[in-house]
Image 1 (cartoon, helix red, strand yellow):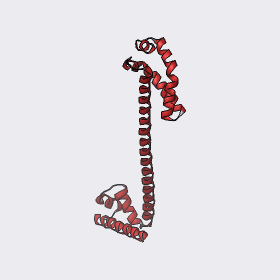
Image 2 (cartoon, one colour):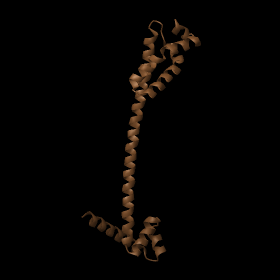
Image 3 (cartoon, one colour):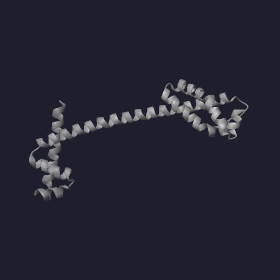
Image 4 (cartoon, one colour):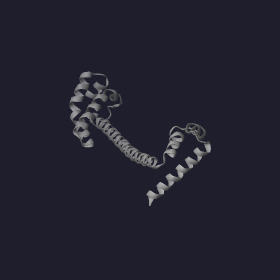
Length: 172
């Protein structure tokens, strides 16, 4: 039997086995996968994997039946991988949409904040620039601005009050 010879390592028998059954492998792959290129790829993959898989062939069944099983398993694996990639792509698409929405929101927030800062008096903008922008303590900012630490604390409190008022005004 040709399959038995191929199992025992006969390369010529293996070649004949592939030649006889390639169309069958391809047809099954095409019917299951529904696309010519995918079927061609899978048929080639099955043929490439057959030398290793032949050791599991038992001569008590027809070779074609065994080959159908191998081909169907390969098709199922391919469909599972396709579904996994599709789910991963959906996940990436959702993540990308979320990231874009967050970036747009952050950009809008930054624009609002820049406009709000321009609306503040110069002394308050300077104080915010040093305490929040440069992460200075109130004491360090006071020294740099030539004012008392209490003045810096009051200015920061005034900035918060004015920003809250701007937000409330825009919400109405």
